[in-house]
Length: 624
Image 1 (spheres, helix red, strand yellow):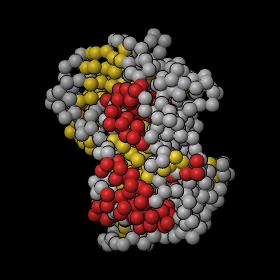
Image 2 (cartoon, one colour):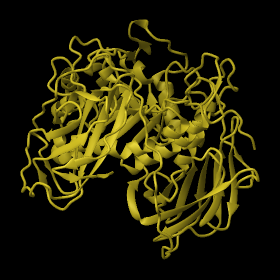
Image 3 (cartoon, one colour):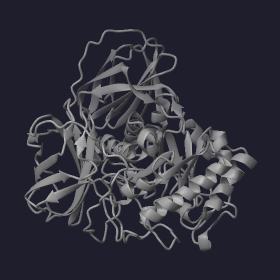
Image 4 (cartoon, helix red, strand yellow):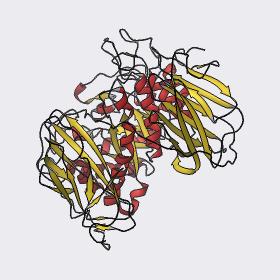
C-alpha cells in the first residue's frame, strides 16, 4: 500500500537485501540485553509545530504524527515563542505571520489526539511571568490539558548580547545574569499556579557558539552564569542541536558529539545544582542536521541521533519542524535525493514540492526510532564492528528484544550478523524498513524466521521486532572501529572575539588527596567547531584512573596557524605552539571516573585541525 495523505503506509512484503549490482559489506552487531542505557523516555520522540503552518492541526497531520509514534509536540514555533501572546494568538507588535487554525486550543487538541506531551515556549522576550502563569492556569486548571513542559524563552542568547541578534528580547538588560534572575520569577509564578509543571531554562549547546563566549560586563559565559543563579530551581535545561556538515558522511558522523555534550551539561549541573543535579533533565527542543534537511541522509541522522540522545539520558528531542515552507527552488542533495529547500518532515505542497503532507525522509527516521520501543522499555547496549552500520536495541517490558540497524553506506548493502548477550529474540521476526529513493514514500514490512542475520540495503533504516527473548550465551565479541572524525560548522558566526576568561566560584570546593604528578590515566575528547578564520575547541578530560587528580595541567601543541584568543574553565599559556591549560580555582580536582570540561576560541589561518595529543600532568592521554 502506498502512503496517502494522512496515513503511514506499511507496504506488503518485499525482498530485504542487495540488488545484483550492489556489493555487500559485512558487520557484526552485538546486543547486550543485560546492559541498560536507561529507558525510552515518555516525551522522547518529538516534533516542533509552528503557528505559521495552517495545516498543523488538520486530521491528516494528526494521523501522520500518530503513525510516527510522536510523543511530544513543541509550540508555538522557535523564535516565535519570544514574541507570541497566547491569549490573543498574536505576535508582539504584529510582527510575524500567524495562520488560521493554529491557536493554542487547537494545538492542545492535536497533542491530546496524538497522545503527545506538550512542550510550550513561555514568552520571555516580550512577555512577563504573570502572562506565563496565566497560560499555565488556562492550560492546566481551566482546560485540564495537562501541559507538562515549559521553556522560559527560546534561543535567548541570540538577543544581541553577543552581537548576533535574531531573538526578540525587550528587556533593557540582555545579559545572562538578567535572564537567570528573571527566570526565577517565572518559575515562582508558574509553579504557584501548578506545582507539577516542569520548567526549563535555556543554555547554549556545548562546543557551539556562543558557548564559552564572555560578553561585555559578564564574569563568565552564558551557561556558567545562568546556572550559578538558577542552581537547582529549574526542572530541566534546554539546548538546540544544529551541527552542520560539509558532506553526507560528516553529517552522519555527528552522533559522536552527543555523549561528550551531555557529559559537559551533566558536569555543569553537578557544579551548580548540588544534590539535585541528577534529577534535572536535559531536553533538545530543536534539532536537524542543518545540512540538506530534506535528504535521505537527514532521515538516517534523525533515527541515529534521536536514539543516541535517549541512550545518553536526554528526555525530549524535537525535530525542526513539522512543515517549514519552501521558496520553490530545488537541487540535488549529495546522496542523490531532491532538496526542496523546505526543512520540514512533511511537504507544505508549495511550488515544485510533492503534494501536501507527503513525508520527507526525516519523517521515516523519526517513525522507526519511535517504534523501536515504547516509553518505559529498556534501552540496551548495541555495538557494531562497522563504522557504516549503527545499531540500537531495546528490551521491552514483555521481555522481547528489538533491534534497529542504520546502514550509512550510500552504495553498498551490508550483511549483518547479530549476536545477543542475556536474551535473544524468539519466534517470527517482523522487519520494517525504509531506504533511499528519489522520494521514498513507504515503510516496507516483511517477516523472517530469525533475528541473527539480515542483509540491509544501502542507506537504509531497518527495524527488527519479535517475540519474548530467551536466555542465550554470547558467541560474538564486537569490534568498533570509527573511521570518521566530525567537522562542525556553526549556524551563527560571532562578529566579535571576547577577551575575558570566565571566572566562576562554586558554592562548594571539593577537597581530596592528590597523586604524585605524572601518575594516573586519562582520556581526552576534543570537538572543534570552525568558521572563516575562527574556531572553538571544546575539550573533555576524563580521569580514567582510580585516584583523584588534584591541581591538573593539560599540555598540547596547537596546529600551525592557530592562536588562542579566549578560553574558559582554565588558564592557557602561551597562546600558540605548545600550550598548557592550568586548572581554574573551581575545578582543580578530577575525581576517579569524573570529567572536566574546558575549551578555548582561536584564530586560524586555514588549519582547523586538532592537537595530535594531550598530556595531563605529564601523562599522555588516550583519545576518548
